[in-house]
Amino acid sequence: MGEPRRWVIDRAVDRSPRATLYCFPHAGGAAGEYARWAAHLPDLRVAAINLPGRAHHLGEQAHTAMAPLVEAVVREVAFSEPFALFGHSLGALVAFEVARKLRARGSAPLRLFVSSCTAPPLPAPRAPLHVLDDRALRAEIERRWGPLPASVGADDRLLAAALACYRADFTVLETYRHVPGEPVDSPITALVGDREVDGAERMTGWREHTAGPFDLHRRRGGHFHTRDHLDGLCRLLTDAVTTDLIRTDRRTST
Picture (cartoon, rainbow, N blue to C red):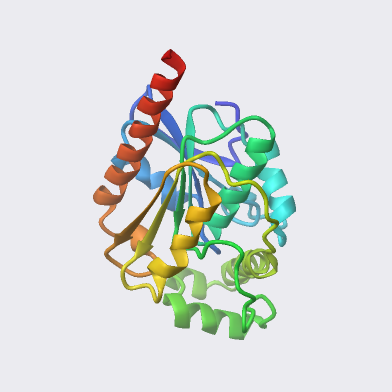
């Protein structure tokens, strides 16, 4: 498909997918979590973005600012059309900025899926995580999102690499400043867990970032609702992309 293998983990159950879904991981996350969705998305090619500082990029320096991160993604990933973008948490912001950059280059996703991420502009963080030392950073990560895998905590090298990845991603998130501009043309679907504090209220602002349709879905679960009830989530993704493909076909045939 044209992308360097180290940048995209690609799995497709159907050899003739109707479109590609590019997935952007959450802070500290890896592409493998989304590559596993391929078994639930037989009509789509799942292309999980593997960012520097993890997995096949483990020996590389992770990005610590949004602009160079987005530039690197757009430079290295081919974005084979037709395609949609999915991002969870920090990944939603990265996907949004990638969509803006692609639009400036004459390309656009069928749809942008944003999950569990406050719409920009973001409020300034009251207690930035990226400035904490490793001990405090690990404690705060585990307090908010649960313990790190036992295999990571038991290996000093793996633990140091994991914390470095989290720190870089939190730096991207906490130093991000939204630059106002024209809304994207692609429809936006926002997803949020029904146990997230003020989740729906934080997500409605995404409506202002699209000139197309907007919809908001509350799903059972907390911040990582994407790990639960996967069949329902993948049905939602497939139905939305299928609708977009039909709409695009109608537009080009008239």
